[in-house]
Image (cartoon, rainbow, N blue to C red):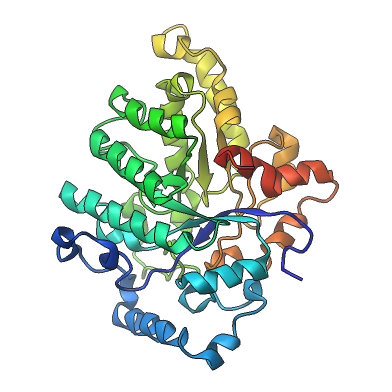
Length: 382
């Protein structure tokens, strides 16, 4: 029996662990040699050697047989079964028993997304989206999450259209201003309109733009500590405390600039940024609406309470360890999504068990919303 057993699970967060040439293999020739190498942090050469060893492992049936079963409890990171090999991922998904799975990249944005050269930004985005579509295209359960930068709205729209054509089913957008523009700027309406029309969600995810803790706070006169897990995000405790600030700022801009008002069919997800903050965020949105609707014409123009746009159009993945039962009881069952984070170590060796321990007394029909129905609503899938 699979890990999920009889429970239907749609997984809103999983990952590829990129190999060193994962993006460049899919880049156009005029961009390929201009892309910087994958940024792997302080480990550098040691990590490169480790990655190459894991690539060699996929060709060794003896080593592979040691990890190709009970994968949820097995190795994580690059040495996980299906971390970067598409055929292995198909078998890993069989073992996990998840009916659908969103798939994000991990490190590849370090090669292009922050470049000042927009040809590198959008050339890297296109290569990334090709690679994602190729990885996920072998199994209909896998849904490729493309990336896009909104700095150039015209090019952003073009890359989203191309990514959709290739098979990307969602688009990871940095939870930050689009260059000098708010996410609610009219220039970006062409992007939101396209996503809404095609029924393809935007997603914010931990990574680019979500580490907002001022660097000066790390200067405490002591050595900088290692990150907790050595995982994809390389986070430390102070980063962790402020990860939700970026999506709160981005969603606030989208609400009060009228994005959700103008595009009621638009759907979005806030992934691997926690969800314990959502209840108070909804209250603060409505408090701000009451306080400013008489003085701010844009606020007054909203036809719904701000929290109602979020309830209608946005979903959130709780961290493993957060009390999902309490969240559901406090703000309702329609907002939260199950996720495994496979094969990142943050997902733990028993993600369902972690969530189930907080769902005691929650009716099965409400659990079904958490485990798969809210995902189906966000992704507009059966």
